[in-house]
Length: 120
Image (cartoon, rainbow, N blue to C red; front, side, top):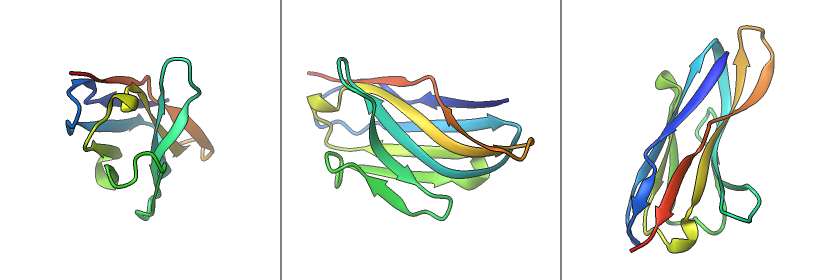
């Protein structure tokens, strides 16, 4: 079994700079793309940022220049450094990863989500 566990969310003031972390654990052979998605109340889940195993990144236009995604392959961990937070960044943030398990099959996994609330 594979688990993705996020941490680092909470209540943040506008302009704040929290960092989210997500650790993948379990019967993992290899991890391909990892990413962060978010879902605000009443909205669909949307892509925030992704990073490949080689370090190539992709960002939603709404976060470009403010958020930075990174990963530590040795620790099976992906990070999201969020800067200059705005109230519209309020959402549940989900970690996602494409993982090959001991079954040698690739599957898409999601974390349970961590709430980020931006308010003064």
